[in-house]
Image (cartoon, rainbow, N blue to C red; front, side, top):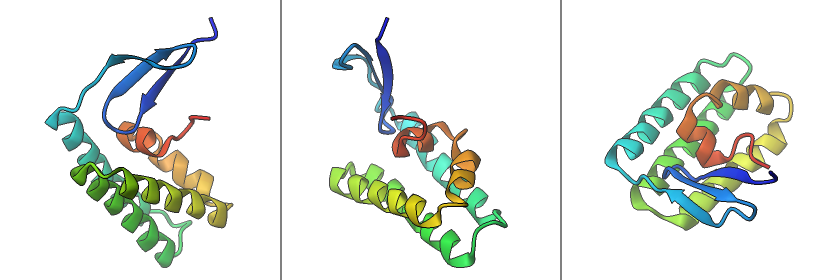
Amino acid sequence: MGDKIDVKKNTGIISTGANSHNTIMRNDSKEMINNFFSDVAEAIKRINGMAELEEEQKKYLASIMNEAKTATEENNEDKEKNCKEKFEAFKIGALKVADKVISVLADLTTIAAFFGFGVK
């Protein structure tokens, strides 16, 4: 009781325990990375289909998704952090549509894990 399970980043690392320091699985497979890349493409498609977003917002979110892909390809933590910060800034600035964007993307598992949807 009181334990939590965390999915970290988009690498398939799952840890469990009171302080979440015990790694129980790691999956850096090509398949996992390909799933992330497929989810990025699907996320961009969904973003572009959102009537609630202005064109500039769509372009900005698409660029963030592409930056997430690049950060993953390069295994670059600085780029990853920067990308996540940009998404957080978008959420703050977009207020009314931010929740809608998250709900549209939340079922894309690797996107949700990368950006920490639902993780507090």
